[in-house]
Image 1 (tube, rainbow, N blue to C red):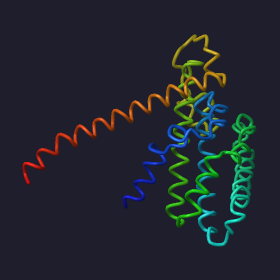
Image 2 (cartoon, rainbow, N blue to C red):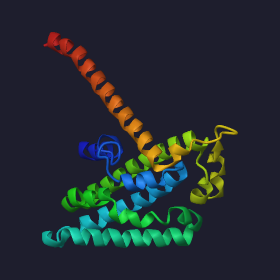
Image 3 (cartoon, one colour):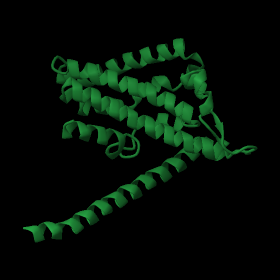
Length: 230
């Protein structure tokens, strides 16, 4: 795998994560992450739209005039979101009843339009596909982590209604971690989402700083050895 593809993977999952690094798409993030299952469902739907829009926009980038590119990108994304909404309503109706109100909001997800403009419209098909997939998975990761944290702190459960999304086999994922828990309503409400998101962003900054410090320490330790060998 070339360094370019490794860079795309690392950017999407961690370094340039839509939520943890760019702080984009916060509206759906705060709206649907009352449970980890809802976050996973929204993340997978958004990932599908990002992959398909990256593919189509990369294929059409040479025939779309620069003057009308933004309206065309929005039109392509809107069509894909409509198809996703219809698919969920037809095949995952119970989940659609929970997420249906927020699925159309994917059209206004600035992260999807941003990747279309900054990457898919300027790169060949394979890198655009990989970028859409990795950015989508990074977004899904953020939704699931935030949803799981809010669900555990707010309700004492994890992956409630996972069977609605993944089928009856996923019943084993539905856990009650704190029996007889009275709940913490603030964490379930949007203000609680802001609080938990702020803690997660701070945690990522601290982790990045610790990793950078460790790399610098290793480089400092190895330098005298190289100079001595020279």
